[in-house]
Amino acid sequence: MKIVRAKKGQFIVIAALMLSIMIISISTVIYGTVTYFRHERWEEYVTILDSVKTGSSYMLEISLAKYSQAQNPTQNQTILRDNLNQWVRDVRKAYPGFGVDLSYSLATGIRSGYGVSPNYNMGLNYTWNRKVSYSAANATFDMNIASVGLTGYSFSTHTFLKMNIADALWYTTGNQVGVRLVIEAEGPTPVTNLQKGNFLVFRVDGADKAFTLYRYYDSRGHPVKSPTYPALNAYVFELRYSAGSRPTSVNVVVSVRDSRGIQVTGAYSIPASLIIDY
Amino acid sequence: MWKSKSVKGSRGQMRVVEAIMASLIVVSAVVFLYIFTATPSSSTYETGELEKIGHNVLHDIDEQRLLARYIYNSPPEWANLTAALMVSLPTDVYFNLTVYDLNGNAKNNVMVSYGSQQIFTTSKAVASVTYIVPGYKTIYDPRIVVLQLVRG
Image (cartoon, rainbow over all chains, first blue to last red; front, side, top):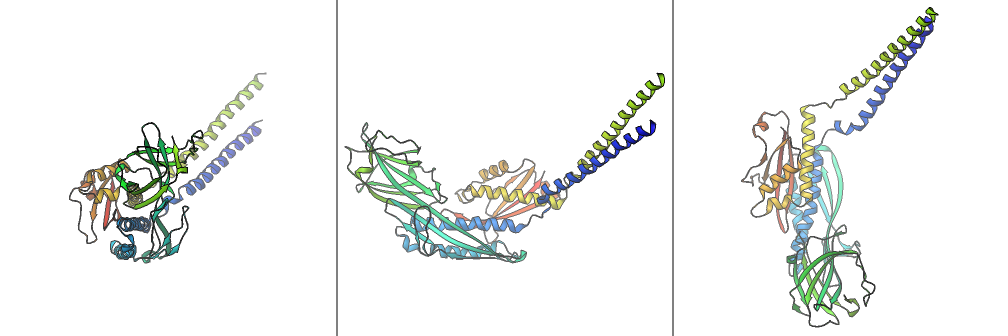
């Protein structure tokens, strides 16, 4: 009887030992796997890459802002090239000892995107005074960091601002007309943070108009209206002004500048079919 | 009858002893793991961690288009920049930020910092992050942001 008991006891202890070995082995492997990234050395070049990439993107914004704010943007056609030449020199200066070498190429010709086809000249394009108007910049960068043996890191960046003069609403009560605009940035990202002061020009039939700005997301149409009022399913800026009577068409010019300083001017004669009784 | 009862009792006691021994072995394995999987701390490891945190915070503030605004606005919003960094960094991380132009001239006449400055000279692990900002709106005028970090 005694011998039998001893054998059973040994078995339980051996089983517990084996279980412990399994726990330790599995835990060690799992721990090593999930914490692998912690033992990887943090390389400073990652900071440089990120910083230069974000900075290059801002260079396009700064250049497009300057380009689009000019009376005649084509006079500033070389602004992006000039700024990027300076940026390339300054990046080298900002990270001495790393062997940072940044080069770029500017977009040329037609490139489609966001439902439009900008025809780039030296990385810049403005297509204004239309129902759908936009300003755009596009460039591709190549980066080498000699100190860490990084070569051929390539990234593209583009900046964009588009304004669509969608339609107009006629408010019978109060005799008002609301011109509705949909504005988008690259992404496409709806632009939602514009205030009245961002609308630099609002001209109806050749005359500047005082207006009140309304902002909302338009997701609900009104099919009973005549003509039917379809939902734009977009973030809408409505510029509402007083009118003596219901217009047959609304000849409108709108100029807007976003928080980045990029400007776009649209012009459109809104036809009767797009003036909706509300 | 008496002998049979005694054998049964002894067998039961042994089972308890065996169970306790087995439990002790398993518990000691878990304790062993706990002790040896504690995060190693060293000044190199700590500096790397702080650099990561610092870079991510600067990058986040920049992505929200706040960094350039704080630096280039007239007058610059140093107090807002300090507040943004304090909110974004862990509470036990002290910082000291300086903005330079490309010629190395400091542009912030106000200290952008948090925590005792003494720690920056006494601590073994001071991390430094360099970040370049090209300009703001239509102005191209690069600034180099140097953020120093230390754990308090």
